Image 1: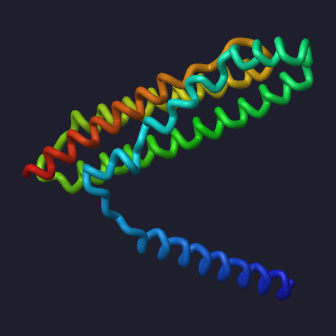
Image 2: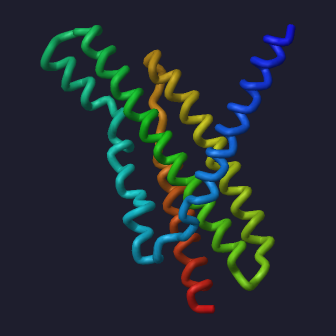
Length: 175
């Protein structure tokens, strides 16, 4: 019985140390935002333009014309495209979250209280999450050959948040 308690105590201590190290690492991170001139490089919605064309039928039509009715090759291409599109959606979500966090930091550092902006930020984040869920559902359907998801809504939401961040940073820089 004492061996079990001793083992549990050691495990608890190790978990505490690991949590403490993780917490210290998170606190030590640089909490500064890039200058607003650099945000186009960091949060570039332009790098997602390829995802608009990724799931179009033209490539499958070309493949059918060249190789006949090769279903196995088309299935492999579809699977690869779905995986790539999913990776784009994940990257877009990460960029969107980074932009939201940057806006929150600018709001906290601001001299003026902006509850309207906080509400807008929550609404945009909710709409973005719903759009991501809808696209992921459509991606599953697309994998079975039913329709194609459209990533333009996510790209537009990211561009809107970038514009919001730029505008907010200019107002804070002017103050």
